[in-house]
Image (cartoon, rainbow, N blue to C red):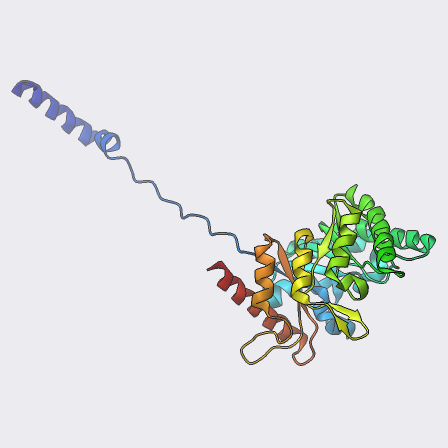
Length: 312
């Protein structure tokens, strides 16, 4: 225990330090602000497929170059999926592609992929035509790379028996995928009618390709096999999800509660989320009862609502 004289000296020293402000710094440090924990990542993000505005674009009410800006300004969507139909002659136009990329970048929109149609059957029964179809897709791979996309979306069209079509489609896809892989691009296949709308058939094709850069783009609504037959959409999406590198939320009509009348979005999105998918889901509105902008917004609201429910 200190003597009374030592205690008096100690108190004098403390008083001197307090007067200089040092004791407060030493004894009572300034409280540090506590940063809030980061918000959890959403179960999935929402993008906009350009096909949702195909009538608007076809009527020249929107220019293709303005699509990315419209996605952000009109819908608050920050990622887009292009369709080659709307810039069909621009795949090799470096200046045009630079302008596309600049316009998307200027408004903070990410370019995800290019949907490619009309370039021939990748599973054509004629080997020469099949090779030509593969080469027809090369410029779109290069265009996707120039835009900063991660993939091109293609079709697995073919002719022949079940097994023949699988083998031919896998052959064309493998060749194209090897070309794309050298450029850090993926080749993803959508269920788009015929055998490709059979989930088991398409998964069989992807397994035959046997390349990590080749995957699927499950579409909620494209399960028409032909001749009036339809594949079960929930089974088909579930089968394709292990290979999915993008997902398309196809929509047509909505009831008074905002539910899509052809697809149970709660059931379908649970399949997607339960598969571990955490990427973008693209709005692809094709209905006619609502205008294209209203259909996009209806799909967006439904996706956001179900995402919130699943997150709980």
